[in-house]
Length: 156
Image 1 (cartoon, rainbow, N blue to C red):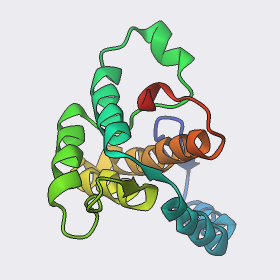
Image 2: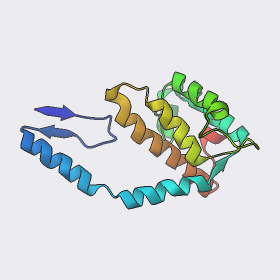
Image 3: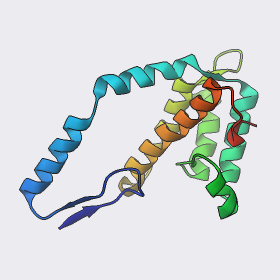
């Protein structure tokens, strides 16, 4: 029996045979809509954070790990990466050759997403998928706040 649970982000995968594993993987791959995903990711560059908002995001992301459980439950999203990885995101905001901020200090959400996902590459294999999915959900949540001009705990 193979069991794989990824902290609630992905389906539970339990199989009793190689054929069953093959069938479940095939189902997973056929349900994936690549065109929809590409279209969604391409819209991330339409939304930007100012340097001040990015600093708020980094600071609040670091604070998130120490919030009381009740406050965490009240937030609509979770920070999917560790405190050390958040520090690396902050460093790369200034130094990354491909995804750093623009000259005016703004950073679009596509670049921000890439800064976060580049840090996930150092995660252990058992947390890699969760953190990848969690990062997309986290960035999507921030974009939703920017799109609707709603306040987000992470950006205020």
